Amino acid sequence: MSALAFVIWCFAIGGWFATTNWYAGWMGTAAVVVFAVLVQILRLDPLPNPAT
Image (cartoon, rainbow, N blue to C red; front, side, top):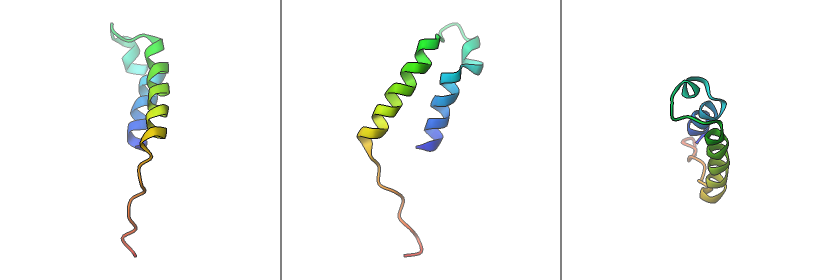
């Protein structure tokens, strides 16, 4: 989940994506909002602890 959040963050700040023709600033904002809502809806269980 955190790796996906990093990708969304990179998309939101622009960077390389801002050099493309299809990118617009509102897309980054929308991606962050959609990702935040999906994280709250999914509520994934933590990984099992291999020590127990």
